Amino acid sequence: MKILAIDLGKYNSVACLFDTATNQNQFETITTQRWALEQLLNQTAPDQIVIETSSITGWVNDFCQSLGYKVVVANPSAEAWRWKNVKRKTDKDDALKLAKLTALDQISTVYVPVAERRQYRHLVKYRKTLVNRITRIQNMIRALFDQQGISIPGGHRAWTVAGIETLSQYCKPLAECGVAELWQGELDLELQSLDGLWQQLQKVDEQLEKMAGQDEQVQLLQTIPGVGRRTAEVIVAALDDPKRFQNARQVSAYAGLVPDQRQSGQTNRLGSITRRGSRILRSALVEVAWVMLRYNPWAASVYQRIYGGQKTRKKIAIVAVARKLLVRCWAMLRHKRPWQDDTSPLSASTLPSS
Image 1 (cartoon, rainbow, N blue to C red):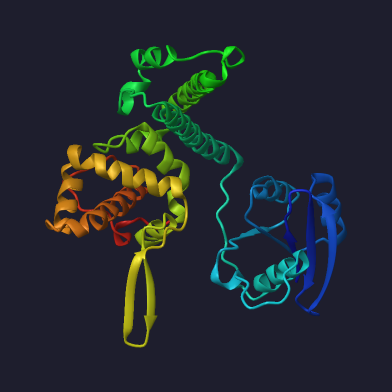
Image 2: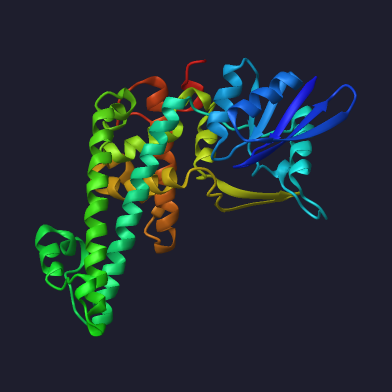
């Protein structure tokens, strides 16, 4: 069996052709472009291709599969892949290790959505990026006023139409500012940037709203009291195909909401959550869990049961609500059933075989 392991790079990639029968390998460096990749595949004719997950994994995976090759995408954060106590680490070493781990069936694989779902996932993430940029500029504007000892409305009131008009009174084109007025020029530029980002965010929201109206999965999750369109989009984009998870623990681990475990002999310690996987998914679940305490009786009862009136258990309880909510969302998507408060969370034993 011939395994072609490719250590992908933005400009150049290193390929290792490993023959499991003879235990021989050969390396080649190629340009990370489609024509060079196709030429390499025609020359080597591998039985299996293995690549690491990266920003360009998507199109490389699609291209190799379109040529009829079997592709495995590896997770480089898995324990077997970590480099420890080594004197040398090169691209060739990475490619060879990738090939040998594949031959030993020790590769932790990564699910790669189809191109359309990847684009949808990227748009959902891009919306979050825009929100972060807006928050950063708002904080910079507040800092400008703090430095001048000027008070502005707190919270969201500063960013209403009336609030922006108040802030704009201090604006002045940078070219017209004296040395003592430079902060007003900075304020003018920041407000212009803020207005541009708001317009971008509106366009993205309009597109996502249009897509949500045609997405049955997003509409299904919106039947949960307290879960809106934006949270539903994040969950749907992250889970993609719910049938790829075999049980509730896999779903929880995918979001990094399971405890870190350290076991040795008779000792078994459970620490804080692993925080692996999608950060956007995890943060969205925790945020909506707080909201659901006001609108969802099920979430409130779970929180109160775990919280038990102990202040030190508040965060533990809300993370538990977030994890249980994710499991319920997965079960709803898998069964294609709306939210039901009078039923217990669906377990793996109740799921139909795929």
